[in-house]
Structures are given as structure tokens and as C-alpha cells.
Image (cartoon, rainbow, N blue to C red; front, side, top):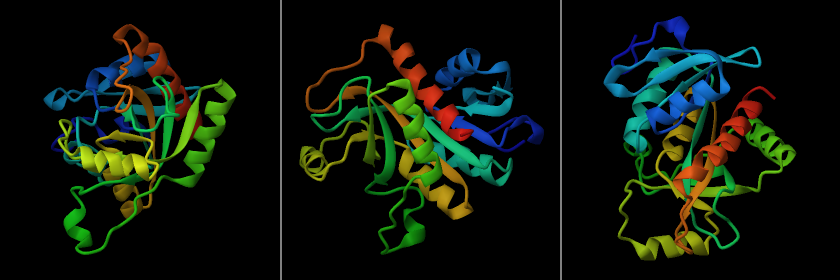
Length: 234
């Protein structure tokens, strides 16, 4: 048990999927895991543990933004010895060839700052995914026939961004999508020598202003969860 996670040590699996929304954690656990049970309810940030094809898996909500994710990822790694952490979440598309419902596998995560920024001082650390997870996820996505893009994303500090000039530079330099958590997850994984990946579903688009209808989200997010699970145990 930690300050923010009420689970017993044996209740957390070595493999953890981390959606931002705790209710998405509940949905994913009930949909994809066998014998899923709730192991955390502290502050309403739900966590569940069960099995997938015989492998123990925990699905733990991370909350929105890098400061919130940093709390949960730190405790999962340091107190529960989590070895593989995969963010499953939504993102905004930032390139014309990236469509709604597509999946993005984040090779790198650009950011203005993270909770770890002070540690690096003047250094611009380049956080990246675990290559084994990345390649396994790509293979799983191809096998499913899911339209998938591999490349850099942008982890933003803010949701209501008023920097169109910054977005323009991200698009100009090939950034595929924007979300709010992956960069700090990758930094923590590098620090503690763990495996990390972000598997993201494009739910809206900064160029076309399209948005995924609510009734279509479950099916599209389901592809993302399956890809993450297959990558974890490839």
C-alpha cells in the first residue's frame, strides 16, 4: 500500500496498462481480463488486476497530465516493482495522413517540460519508447489490420493550448499527435530501467477538427488495448 495506491503488494502485476480515465480502466479490465478484481479505489483512481491469456495484468488509471501520471508510475515502479508500463489513451492527430480511429505508437515524446525537468537542468533529454515493445506493438497492429503510425508525439502540459505557433512547428517537424502523459512515463522508465510504451487512439484532429463519436469510441479503443496486451507478452 502506498499513499495513492491502496493495493497489497501482490495485487499489482508486473505488467501494467495505464489509461488516464479510471472508468476506462474499469471498462478495459471487464472487457479484456479474466477474473478481474478491483485492487485500488484511493481518490477514485480505479485499478484492476486479472489475467489475459493466463498472464497477470493490472490496469491502473493514471489521471490527466504528467504530474498525475508521475505519481502513479513512480509508486507502481518503486513500491510494486512493475516492469512493463504501457499507456493506453486518446490523442489529437497533427498530420494530414493521420486519421480518426488510427493508432499511434509513440517512438519518442517531445515536451516543453515534465515533472522531471528540474533533474536535467540545461539538458534536453530525449525520452523514447522501449524498442521491443514498440516493434511487438507494430507487428500486432499490422496483424489486426489496424491503421497504425509509428513516430514522435507531443506531450503537452496543457489541454486548452493557446500556442498555435507551437502546434505549427510540431506539425512542420512531423509530430504525429498530441497527448499529455507519455513523455514523463518514458523518462521514468529510463530512470528505473523498465519497459514503457504509449499506444494511442486518435480521437480528434487538430487540422480537420474531426472528433470520434462517443458511440464509436469503445470499438476503436478496444483495438488499442488488444495491441498493448499483445505487445506486452510477445
